[in-house]
Image 1 (cartoon, rainbow, N blue to C red):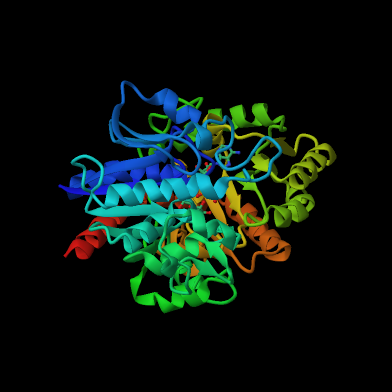
Image 2: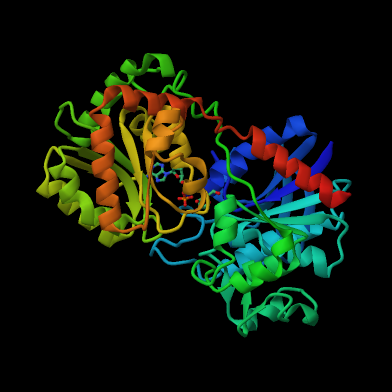
Length: 473
Ligand code: ADP
Ligand code: GLC
């Protein structure tokens, strides 16, 4: 077995704000058959601490960025217990005022530093061969390993280049890194400190969550200022598409559904459709029911969607929207629901169990993202026979086969693509989807095609395992 330490700020089911948690929660089990033993280092948020049963104390820090801290081990988790940094309820990144916690740099520098300590072999007899950091919150781990010359190799996975962890240069003095780390080849970023930037400069390997996104972030248009860095490290960058946990997301066994079903018994979805209609206050009719399950943000193209709702309704379609996020978008959708009573239903919440029912009862899921590193809701859609209608970008482009004429005749279409991500193209896609829906044989074929696709972690876990093996030589 190869010991790998994963480092992340989210982990399903303990702490989740998005797809990152789904990935860190599911990947370890998929890696096990490949001879990879993963332990995951997490911040000791209250929800994580409550979960620990008689943890062992691995390590004491007399002072970790302003207070005492400990590394606790419980099962496959290693938890950084630091009440002065993580002992706060609610969102892992934001305070009750909806703004970043002002000490986020300390909170996530501590996470990286603890990972560095573990990767240097300085904590008991646990000596991981690989430290695998996820996103900016963990991105200092490869930096500490490099500048402290730890024996572990490092992997940094980018789940979203839009979040980079940038802080004023004055924090550098407190990071316990040598002065040489404040350089263009280290954490220095336009005179400030960049956590993700430092990780990209330091990691032995860089991955991102789809091949298309890997190519996109090497361009100035989508590189979010880091495309030069990505190009400089091109030979170290690979795109490995995410899988999903096919046990948690299984329509044949899912207890969040009103009725469970398989690809052969798609008519059973009807009971779920009725349940969705009821929950979202929608009329009952024979037309298509679209859904959205999303953070309500610019990235996800939610403003584009808001601009197409009148046209969606004019097509005789309905929409169930489950989402939470920016207030102006929540207001726009609430207004649309008022305008189109019975046609557009909005639940402004984050509700894991309802998200399963919505996938199990809607006909199609709309994903008009401006960029999408991988995206998981289209994969859940495939698995649940909820046909994905996606912007042709990043992982959405890599996982959905557009229902063009060739794909339809070959029987391989699994959804619809549209480009660019704007209201005109989305309206067009909605109108194509409505037309396809009116041809039940074609529609069912698409649903079955999606349900047949392998969206599990199997293939991608093999790729991560091969990458780890290559690194340790
Ligand atoms: P991102 O991580 O960028 O938000 P992903 O598609 O990778 O996008 O992952 C989103 C995850 O969050 C999925 O598991 C999705 O089902 C879930 N999700 C998003 N919004 C909601 C919501 N309002 N209620 C329940 N689950 C949600
Ligand atoms: C990020 C991305 C999303 C991806 C997820 C998990 O949140 O926005 O596209 O699926 O990470 O990798």
